[in-house]
Amino acid sequence: MSLPSDQLIQIAYIAAIALFILALKWLSSPATARHGVLAGEVGAVLAVAATLTESGVIEYRWIAVALAVGAAIGVPLGLVHMTAVPQRTALSHAFGALAAALVGGAEYYARLPHLTRFEMGEISLEVIIGSLTLTGSLIAAGKLQEILPQRPITYRGQNLVSLLVLVAAVAVAVALVIRPEQTRLFPVMVMVALLFGALLVTPIGGADMPTVISLLNSYTGLSAALLGFVLNSKVLVVAGALDGSSGFILSVIMCKAMNRSFSNVMFGAFGQVQAAAPGTKEERTVRSASAEEAAAILASANTVIIAPGYGMAVA
Amino acid sequence: MWSPEGGHKARSYFAPDEPVKEEHVPSDFISNLYVFVLAAFVGFEVIRRVSPLLHTPLMSLTNALDAIVVVAGIIIAGRHETVISTVLGAAAVAAAFSNMVGGFLITDRMLRMFKRSKPKQR
Amino acid sequence: MLELYDALSKKGVEVKFGIHPVAGRMPGHMNVLLAEADIPYDKLLDMDAVNPEFPQADVALVIGANDVTNPAARSDPSSPIYGMPILDVDKARTVMVIKRSMSPGFAGIDNPLYYLDRTMMLFGDAKVFVGDIVRELGAGH
Image 1 (cartoon, rainbow over the protein chains, first blue to last red):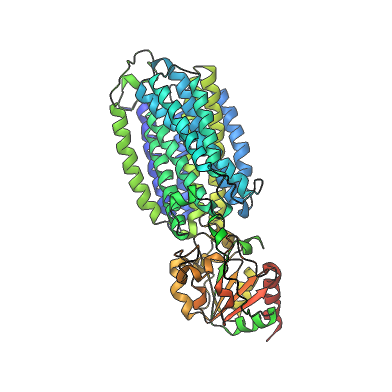
Image 2: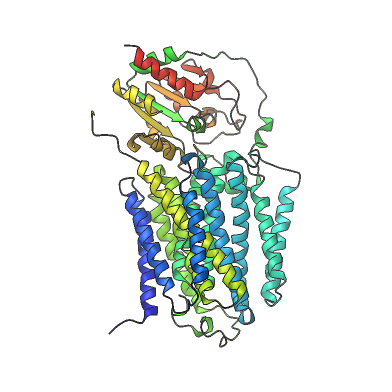
């Protein structure tokens, strides 16, 4: 007795999910971490191979071209210098969100005449989160690459403007849920969400980038999970949930490390707060020393703890 | 990939003419929600144990795993239904696959650099 | 960096690294950079692990870090960073800070650490200064 191929594909997906979870588990120690990468790779290959045998897939040329293009972009991005890893990560959040938003859009157009309101709601939410993560991540990458100014860019009433843009995006989404056949509204919703993503990250300063990257990580995961809901695909739901919770945990750690709350990072641009700080500027004495003296003390020490900052990393 | 699951005709891709407008919450949604909540908890517990040493590789690895969105793009582009869905699907495949390739590559490069100190004094 | 680590280790000095969670530009970035510099990962300690060790340390060497070592975060409720967890470098017997100048860091906050009696300020470019120290360590003794 043999299984129908559809069920084999499902089994491949389940194996992929198990491998993904193992991959993350092995990442708990540097000694086993590389097995984790291997497990992830095997899982991904398994899932992609299974999908290619899916009976609904009849046209391979586009897929082949797209895979080649993806590899051509991905390989150089995988070989960047280690100091550029944050930019690369932000960029890959952008790609992940882009992919999720594109699939959401394709689903909308493909299913259009038969779309239920519930499905429309799922798609709208997914596309909004994907779109705002896309532009938000691009801005973050620009700031990290120092194409855009690192300093927070702020203006009066910006939180109000951002909020209004978000409300507008939600309003368009609600209109679409009521009347899914209003195809003209769909691009409008995407544009407004893109705008919101840009507005959200532009005011955030360079010092808060670790938090922002983590948060965008979490959004990327969320958009993938929502896509899983839209497509009724458990493998996407699980991968998205894993990515989302990872991003969420990291954001919480980063916020704690800076003693700030989410809302503080998102809505109170750093840099402004301290403007009032100077005040007491008394002259105090500072002891300075030469390399020679420093070397002598270091040489006679038993234990030395080095506290490095980004300034050292560039050196 | 989605149609075989549970065989919900209303959501089946390959019988797109059948579905009727259903206004109640579909049962697929509930089962997906189960999966989501359980996966989020598993993810939370597993990832909490990841050493802070490896938070950067963690992020690049989850990025690569998240690139599994590529399978959705493959199905949509591969079904070749309308021009627009094929183009959007193919673009999604390219974007997601770049993450998959790049993410695994850089994660492995980073992890290769983490070395234990040579067994010596102490 | 590795040269400093090697030069000190050769002299029997135990060298560890204390890594603040937000050091670098994304979570865990500093660890990757140090691993790239061939520092063994068992010498990289996160903040919770390293803080109890500062009181026993002879020297805390701060390189290119500022706000995350600022004791005002512990003691001064009026400081904008009050309450932020920091590396307790000020509890070490001697503190050395390599820094380009006295100018405040990114967040523009004055750091009382620099005025402590047991703090030595080492002004200069981090890379050059570390190079100088390594040369001195190699030359002397």
